[in-house]
Image 1 (cartoon, helix red, strand yellow):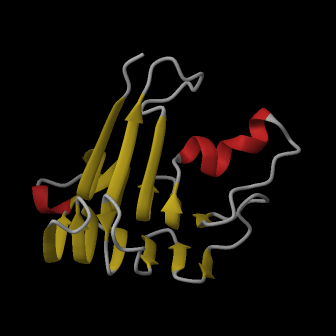
Image 2: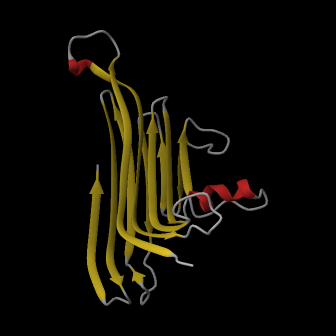
Image 3: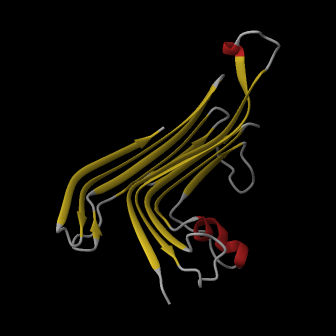
Length: 201
């Protein structure tokens, strides 16, 4: 049995599908408006991903753990959703366990927000400890901060944080993902890094 484990520092990602079309007849391209879009971004200073095809999990990677995870989704409709978690085990564990067995509890170390609100996400803005999420028709923000880890392990850090923000203007959709980590130690702190700041837009 061969198991692949990957670790990433400063994990960021942004993806979007955007269609532009004039809302009203006009000869000027500057008057073009967004007619449809689907925008998503995420950030996490540390991600540990396990690829094991023999695990009975219909996702890839089959296992994951992300520290200070945040994401933001903004779609035409409008629809917005944000997630923030100081220790995020992936969507399968964080939100999918009750679907396998209703007796299983929801993952507790997470906060979410959606717009428009629905019965499963009744609030457009939530804050829980060092995690916050908010969603409106034009702006979605997820933010998480993780306290210092134990020292001496394969990976240790002083503090990790991330914020993912998606915003919509009349002719532009922007997603910004920011991840930071301080006092990073690798291989029992044989390698030490004072600070890493990653940003993608």
